[in-house]
Image 1 (spheres, rainbow, N blue to C red):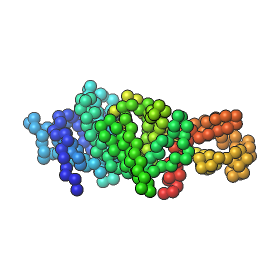
Image 2: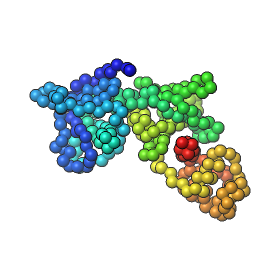
Image 3: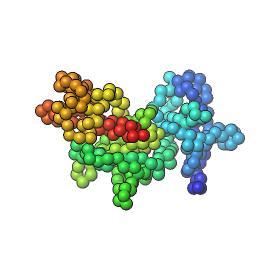
Image 4: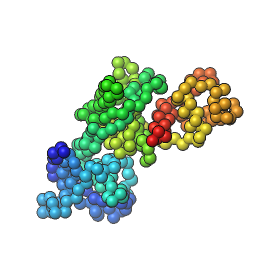
Length: 307
């Protein structure tokens, strides 16, 4: 077992521990001055007493309790000054609680970077790289299981399949765009768009929500771009079947109507609905193709169906 190391020791700040209601105005009175110590295994929040850390009333949050860092939240009306607030969500006896840390902007970035790295590195993910190239989805590329590491300015994905190693190293200070798709159930995803050998490509990373959230927060901290958060897609059975058929094979209208058991007019209605949901796009005269949004959705749903 790796030795526990201290990364930040007794950083002076303010905090509130174990909140259930972030909108409760009484929270303002619960904000206390104290110290934060961050190790490679836990966060320690220590109230101040006589200008010193009061260790007897220290609170601990271990990394296996943490479910989210820096989630968007709405606080009570009164502002907490010019400092930055870091919300940390964690589990206590299967109930989610929140801790708010109030500190300077620079110190908040330092704390968040450490937390994102510690909560992400070495974890198992699935990724497709490249997922798209020059704006075109590469339908023949399938997800591979691998590991993720955050190293200073880089996000590194590594995998091995049948003795062949694959690694994708992405400079997070030079990405063009990124997109977060956070789901409460099933896998969430992070898509990174960047230039490689003069061509814009994208890499798709999928994992459980906490891991994608940690990685997305780190990307946000290092990049100058702002994440695009996608809404979940709700497809009925016929819409899903059509999208799945388009993902797995080349089909025409005759094949689609036969396999779905619908008329050409009904098929066009299904297509129109998928166009409005931005799952499909027009690619030619009466021709349609999956969008990146649609492809990601079908990949994630097929993975869920496979268990």
